[in-house]
Image (cartoon, rainbow, N blue to C red; front, side, top):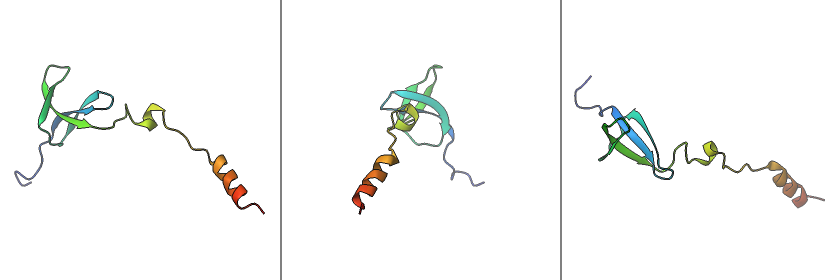
Length: 80
């Protein structure tokens, strides 16, 4: 492998700014901010707008569209 062409792979804290949820994982994400984690060590901080803690699909707040209403509209529109 050539030296100096690969990004640094290190531990990074990802923080959901919507729900203030944070998790520690390994990544090559470049960031200038840092945060002190629960273990007392300082890690780079990468802020994200949405995670599994705030996404409607994972939180159960996603509305499910029923096709019954759409079918009835179609039938009423093309009724003869």
